[in-house]
Image (tube, rainbow, N blue to C red):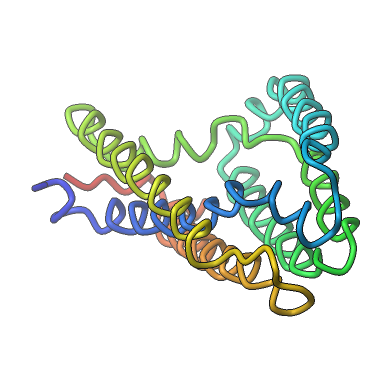
Length: 208
């Protein structure tokens, strides 16, 4: 824990991971949401979502080579992260209207699937902040937070935030919770990039 106490960057990244996983807990109730709020049948969400997710994976592989080369330029890497966070946040806000029409959920998901991956830019950015001997400890802390908070967030959504009888604005409660947590995580991510990953910095900041 010495590394955590001495590294502001790692503290920010762990808080970002915590908030992001609290937002991702929505995925555990999404199928139930589509059934109760929009009248879909059991399994309908998977039938629609699997092709979208599969295309996103395929498109990521197709564009990965180009993106890896493109993000080697620090200016491109910084621009991509800002644009990706902004676009993802807008799509997230649109999805809050899903209780009124499935299109509000599906269209943003399709548009996000068209976005190329970051070419490993975020992972490289994270690794660049630590010396080699601290890499394992930093990644271990991230994995621990990811695993613990993932389970807790699923329980929170299923137990407290999702109500299958809710309609209209009441049905947006889990969506609004996801939006709050994810936008907070995006804000921390943007701050970290501005503080530690701006192209104007001569070298990435290393923290022991």
